[in-house]
Length: 213
Image (tube, rainbow, N blue to C red; front, side, top):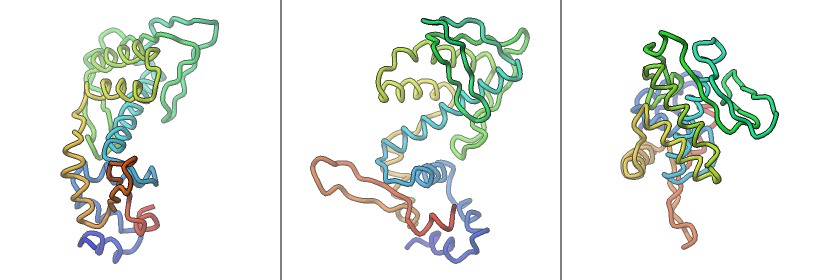
């Protein structure tokens, strides 16, 4: 087992998470994703999970800004007469029956710096101009009706997130981040045993779930 795993297992439970400060931001974020999912994932599934998490946090931010009236809904096109609903309080915006939602920053507020990704280790808190955030989210909602599959939706979320941070490459996750976590004993890698599953799977070392819950 890796030295860091030994340290974690020998610390009192209330202090165990403190040892994770040894990890770099992306290593910590990957570990958190695996802890949250509680299943084995491929490197690509880890990246997709990160993209979805970051995209959802952007939409949550728009919900907060709309609720505080920093931005307003400028236009909603509906196929049928169903009220537009927004779920807030740490949930993504949900537009029922709408085909196109357009947000607009209030006058003179477009140059405000807005924090994103505050609850992440990677990329961590970043600041963006409100006008840039609104523009990117409007484009996302404009293209959303064309997303027919989960792959389409992930690709659209990837496009949204890439406006504000670098999405780690498959090579970086597969060849650098995951091997480091495996070497430290925090993550276990499982080699495929059949031709149908040709990609390596990664899961959190089971001994960590109770310690890091």
